[in-house]
Image (cartoon, rainbow, N blue to C red; front, top):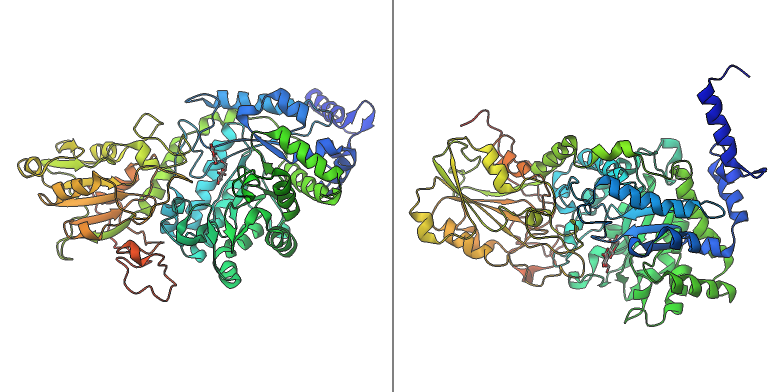
Length: 629
Ligand code: BGC
Ligand code: BGC
């Protein structure tokens, strides 16, 4: 043996100590062993209780270190808005996650728990994190590399809070904008959704070609990803959330399934099952698709996770017959159950089902092997605790610049000038006096939408750190330009003030699942009256902040210009970058923009798609202009 330095000797001794406990060589703890051998070794040591514990995911509200220890809990999550304290710092987060982890590590076998969170447009539950545009805007960019970089930035911010697992991306193909989760979908076109699975190697790291199709997470600065919601979530009848997708298997496989092939090929670690049904059958109970197709046919080797109380919702009303639901869900092939609170009931019920030979041990073993595979592959056994040096990643300037780039590329210019020869955009930076109007101009919460700080989103500017569109306008115009802001000015005020032009920012108010379905898709008041009052009196550009196309046709003639900004997130300067010509508009609609809701559903590939207001792929362009003018 060559000469070793003192610290090196110390390191080797430490490694030996952790893999050799009381004289016994613990093969599963040895990172030099192949993953398969580690799984096998650990599996043969585990009791039924420990195995069922691995399959249990509980909410942080009930996850004390002791509960995790006593019940051998395998996973903990933060639900939407579930944080250790309001405006918690990275340190508060890592203390909580590490504390829970220490509970898991203190069990007999010391299997680390995996903590998961919805980081669906950046690390969106966390104060001060960079909030990227929601997927509906990212689809517009047609830029998979950009989305990959967003994944990498998000992974760093998530890891900064000690968390190694994100419930993202949502690869739904939203086929009806009435659906309140349409903004979580990149496009109505599955080809765009497929290309945006590049966010997976962004989040997890690049899978080496020889490993194609196995779950992969490239170490401490990457996170396990989750392709959701399997499958057909975006195809429900009338766009009803958690509804019924009534389509042929040909349509299911050609529209809603393709992105799963890409996700798996790129090494996605987990797949979340959809609340929705396919032709009347709950996906959480669909053994043909979860086991038959996803696991057997596509050879997915990571773990399948249920949605929040997704198993309970197999029956209507939910939880009407838990034992039956659990049996159906587990036998369908779900490996980890997002319980999330009543873990005793889950553990006891599943234990009885196994003891009664209703759920075979082979099914439990399949589930646990998959969960352990992901934990081993990602290095969780070697690095179960947080890395404090990552704290500075949260909301870093580099990530904010990336988000700003994404915002400007996600804008779609739908109209520019009452006639093409009189374009209003790019706007002049140097003008004596301009008007900014609309409730969405100065509201960071509106700009971010649902799944931001709170589950359903927040109203106002105090929720987190960011730049509103109004603040961005003030930063962009010439210092000599007077910026007047009124939310909903009356027409006389607008007429009598000699404004050079107006920027009107209106749209939807935040919503998320269960509360976002809309039958009429109109812009809520005072949006339409603000458009009327302002655009009738002065040249105006209207910026619509919304999670989907909304009814604009009745107002269109009054507007000089119209921009769809979707849900841009914290970096409002991405909007002004294009409005004022520092960059050109490049975005192309990734959704069909309807005239009236009677046309819905209307998608680019429907035979009856004859008369949209703006067709799929539409988007005017402008050229960047140099200097201050
Ligand atoms: C949503 C999922 C989410 C989960 C955890 C569910 O209600 O459908 O998308 O990942 O909650 O918050
Ligand atoms: C949680 C969400 C979850 C939802 C499901 C909420 O209370 O915060 O994360 O998705 O319930 O119904």
